[in-house]
Amino acid sequence: QVATLLRAEGIDFVAVDLRPASIRDAWEAGDKVFYGDITHADILSALGTARARALVLCFDDEAAALRTLRHCGHSMHGLPVLVRTRDDSNLEQLFTAGASAVVPETLETSVMLATQVMSAIGIEDARIDARIRELRAAHYAALREH
Image (cartoon, rainbow, N blue to C red; front, side, top):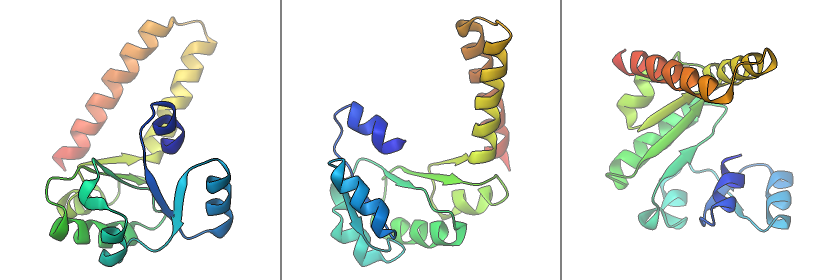
């Protein structure tokens, strides 16, 4: 989904995956997706991260995200690093390791469900948007404090 939105905005990106089928599908869609394990600093460097405006980590394995964050901290000072995670159980570790932002799937799934419920019962979009902004702001602020 990140790639879809970046593409729609005309923003160039490079992605790395370990699944050959995903890489093939991405190339067929015109995206630059390469095979590699970015938990290794040399792979990060080879991708041109020195020119990157941001790094997005979408690992299913938080230990891999932490290894990558540690590499980033040593070689890419100031680069925003956004991490998708299943839940908020390791939030502090991820921030300490260098994440600029952490997006827990459980929260965002709940937010999307709440949005759909409010829409289904007739609440206007502007009011839904305001409530969701308030909810996210409160939840993410509370997460950052821990």
